Image 1 (cartoon, rainbow, N blue to C red):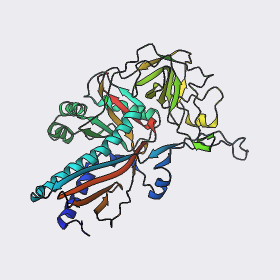
Image 2 (tube, one colour):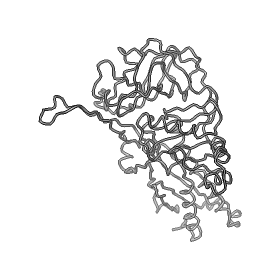
Image 3 (cartoon, one colour):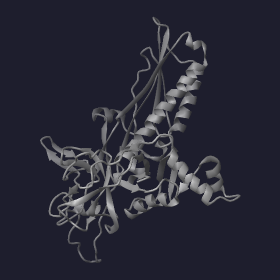
Image 4 (cartoon, rainbow, N blue to C red):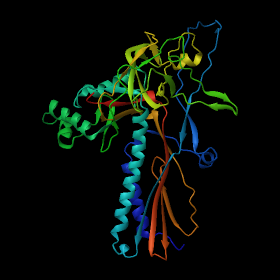
Amino acid sequence: MANSFSKEERVAFEDLLEGFQDALVLSRNVSVYNTDSTMMERSNNTIWRPQPYIAQSINSTPGTAISSYQGMTQLAVPATLGFSKTVPFELTTLELRDSLQEGRLGDSAKQKLASDINIAIMNAAAGLGSLVVPIAAASGDYDDIALCDAIMNEQGVPDYDRFLALSSRDYNGLAGNLAVATRSFGNAKSEKAYERSFVGMVAGFDTYKMDYANRQTAAAGGGALTIDTDGAGTQANFLPQATSTSVGGQINVDNRFQVVTVSATTSVAAGDAFTIAGVFAVHHITKQSTGQLKTFRVVSVNSGTTMTITPPIIGATPTPTDAQLQYKNVAVETASNTAAIVFLNVNTASVNVFWQRDSLEILPGRYAVPSDAGVAVMRAATDQGIELVMQKFYDIDSMTIKYRLDTLFGVVNKAPEQSGILLFNQ
């Protein structure tokens, strides 16, 4: 082939792939679903991924017939191969006299593509994670992380494979607490915190330091917003359903979101976190109230009085369906036509994200790049199946070699109620 790769370039690509895999810090801690390329092309790169079932039990006596069997509603969310990232660059025949150029540019491309994947995962957790833990002070205490553990435990999130990614300043604040509060000779935890600002496992979370983090601006919606939580209406009694019927027949329904009507949405913005007076979180399995107000996130503002939130308010009152009983997530202990909305992000701050592995999912994609079209092609995949494609083409007119590195993937937050954000200085 006219544009085949040299042995040196192939070795460099193998080194690049190894470094690319090492840089995928966040993606190693989410679940992976490998898709079929043909099916994805025929479905507009979208596939519906199932959410966990939540079953209900009843009292039963052996030998006595069960009076009624419950219908089980399988909820699902759409996942799309929505990220097509490319790093293109070119080298002239003069620049190629420095053989190190290719390696340096390849390292830069690898770093950027890995960063794109990590950021996509962080955005999925930071944008939709509905478990919100606001801390009044700056980072620096075990109790801060323990509150993330508590909010997950109270709502029945699995107690394994939990992860927490903190901004550098917040992570170092926690490391500072370990370095001082537990410092002693021979204490490995204290020594690592002092020497390397290393935290490790805290309160059931594997912790990671991010060199970038999203910023959540202070809520500007004001303190007089209200919402109707009267049980007789639909505001606090969302109906989960697997499908709905339209002109074209049955279509899947994304039950992560609910459009609610409030007194006003002036200055409310996507990302705002809030609680509703009298609306308490329940344990998703036992359905017992936790005694803590349920936290919600604004996904979008639709009009002057409506906005989309996550999760939906499923109070299962007054005459609940099987689906509402199964997926009930709140106890409306004080229903009101004018329940107060209280925003939690009162100051602009870095967004620290925490999640259970199965709540976030990455979908590796694949390009069908021809290898016999005059362009040299190399491809390889990480352990998770994320593919990296490298192509090279020589332009005889300009005497330049064009390179491009590509990756195709999707990220989805399947369970916003199993992921959340930790905000300091609130």
